[in-house]
Image (cartoon, rainbow, N blue to C red; front, side, top):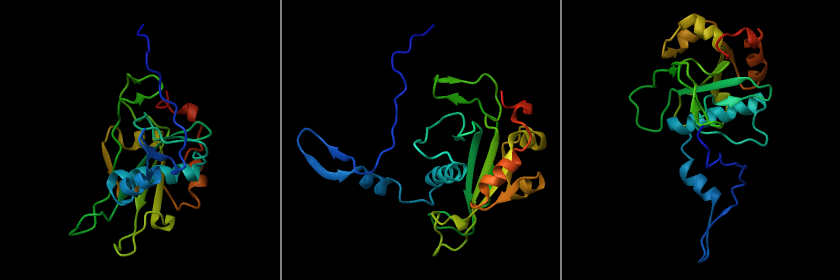
Length: 209
């Protein structure tokens, strides 16, 4: 058995007021300054995806006292223990566009990596109990604002239903999601829609274990 020398780091939420310091002096820069520098482009694919995870966590009650875990097998775990994969897409990008982006979401089965044990699952599958597909549907670059929750549409689908509908398919578009029964929601009704989509007992889902 391999002895674990370096345990996982415990991460606590930051306030943004933490200073950048050295033994010489305080440089007048704070963590919030870094956040402004690194995280202001909310339309960028990577950051928009992270924001979508936060929005879904906010709707499902998974934000208080928690921090995002990078590279875990699933994006979110709700207070009820439901494992959630969050996917995002947008018609508009930061860069110059000739036309709005085509909307597709990645849904490929994976070998999940588990942060607690630094190990991979032995079975290639969809790791979550449910998927929330987040579409920033706004199409006017002058007024697009990813922080405006009215500019987002959410589609929810149980993983068991996704598996039954598309098998090992790696990507899916809006038409496919709607054809296969994903339930559409606004932010205001995302919580109730999510739980309605998972109304059948999770223990009956063979992909859970």
